[in-house]
Amino acid sequence: MEASATTIFNNLALANVASILAALVPVQKGNVISWVLQDALALGVLAVNPAPKDITSVSQLEKLNLDLQNRWVFKNAYDLPNVGNRTDWYTDTVFAGQQFVGTNPTTIKAAPQELVAEFVGEAKKQNLQDVVDYLGSLTLDSLYVQDYRDFRDAVGVASDADLKDGDGDGARFQCAAVVLFNLSADGVLHPLAIVIDYKQSVANSVTIFNKRLRASDSAASEATDWPWRYAKLCAQTSDWARHEIEVHLTDTHLVEEVTIVAALRAFADTHPVYTLLSPHWLRTLSLNASARNTLVPQIIMRIVGFTEDQSYKFINYSFNNFDWEGSYPPNDLKRRGFPTDQAELDGPKYHNYAFARDILPMWNAIKSFVHEMLAISYTSDSDVASDADIQTWCDEIRGDDAGKLKSFPAKIETLAALEDAISFCIHIATNQHTAVNYLQQYYMTFVPNKPAALCVPLPKTLAELQQYKEINIVNSYPVNRPAEWLLSSHVPWLLSFRVEDKNSLSKYAQSLFQVNAGKKSPKPAEVATATAAKNFYDSLVAFTDKMLQVSKSLDDQTIPYTVLHPAANAVSILI
Ligand SMILES: *[C@@H]1O[C@H](CO)[C@@H](O)[C@H](O)[C@H]1NC(C)=O
Ligand SMILES: *[C@@H]1O[C@H](CO)[C@@H](O)[C@H](O)[C@H]1NC(C)=O
Ligand SMILES: *[C@@H]1O[C@H](CO)[C@@H](O)[C@H](O)[C@H]1NC(C)=O
Ligand SMILES: CC(=O)N[C@H]1CO[C@H](CO)[C@@H](O)[C@@H]1O
Ligand SMILES: [Fe+2]
Image (cartoon, helix red, strand yellow):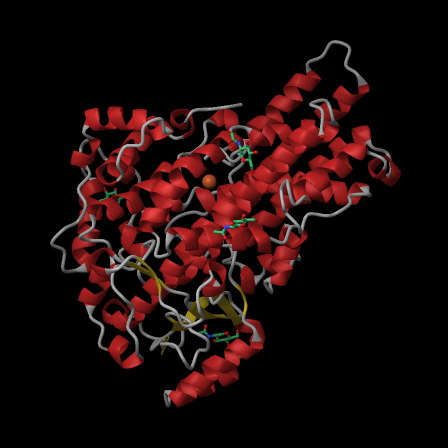
């Protein structure tokens, strides 16, 4: 099962990133990456990856992005279009869209009443009567938030401390933004207000209200509304941390790893749970090793606005707060204030939330498959309750000297509970990871859309923010920090390689069918497995149609949302 760093990551991409690292990391002998570095340096890849310098406008960065895409050779991270291809990439529409179909479509949630009240109070304080009236006219069920208020708790600093890594010229800054959105009855998500860095209360922080209070307001001034664009940049930077450290690294890679290691300890390789789960482990553990040795310490730590210790605390915090059952897709949608009824999700109000509309049918497809497969070995709840290996699995996942994943069920004593737990292991390894991984290239290679940190301190007052011009945004980007720029743009690309066809979910269903259907005198279990695999495959075909239909129904037709295509949905956390 061990795989080297170069098999996991596409060779050339790793060489690229390695060469960037070489420029700033003293080569560590014996580290996986050190021998790759030699190759990369020989290729001189770094030399052909220009990072921006002497930049004074955002349009220069847009142009650089397109120029790199138009090169003849060495396109590397720029061999595919990215969000910078859209002339409207910075707009409210595209910003809002990313909450539903971007790299992190998993944390937008219903706005809590007390938080809305704080925004209303702030609007009063700012004498924005029209905002007060407008917010007053909205009902709670149309208000949603992206809420990064917990960052200071997560990294263990005082509730009013600045979030930063380093001092002086090379310092990087992070913020804990809060974004208030309105979701209209016809499905338009529109940002109303942003707290750029929440310190103790809205009143004690810098909060800006969108001049375009209504989505229908003229878009003419959007491009030059620099204070508002800066606030959106803060929100995107907060989301970088939420997405990469929590949603991606912790909630998929690390959580899945715990279930895998526990399963390896609890089950013999002939155990039905083992056979169901193991196809979804392909390379995941070796990848953890790479993530631990290389990605986290050498890449993430070099671009985020948290110190190394804070970043590890953030991982701990995310892991300790991971809610296993609460994260089952229907439970997750419910806790975030979205419907769990497919017809309602497909209706006008939620029709732009393609991730949600896709994730439920995929969850159901996996559950049906797991249900059929479990029926081969277990006929009743008591069969499950008396399976000591399942209890060992639970103990290994939760144990203090083992997985420490406390929200995993202490006991699994019914078929339904076993079906859910196994389905969720498969779900994390496939749908969930795929959804938060593969769009990194599109949304993050173009650094201005979503940088990992801000390069200058945030404004301390609203008056200061109101004076912001284009140059303040440009200076917040790592434009004079080539290593940070190149890592920020190339790592998302490195992580976004599509799986080979043979490692897709639909191929898995197909091969499982073929292996079991091809027997001369099949055993009953093989016949049943073939049937389950066939049904699963059929449900993936049906899902493909559904997904395409969902994508075609989105208001924004610039790029399709097909990340969960079963022929591309990875069978395991491969990268
Ligand atoms: C993205 O922009 C580049 C540069 O203008 C262009 O070559 C490429 O075709 C564009 N791709 C798409 C899909 O628009
Ligand atoms: C906000 O949502 C409400 C409820 O559907 C709607 O009446 C209002 O027009 C929406 N506003 C915007 C800006 O979309
Ligand atoms: C993370 O938690 C583990 C125990 O769960 C602890 O040993 C470690 O010191 C913690 N790390 C940080 C940075 O807090
Ligand atoms: C290959 C590898 O290093 N796997 C490790 C992943 O992490 C767990 C601990 O959570 C280790 O036990 C594995 O050995
Ligand atoms: Fe990943």
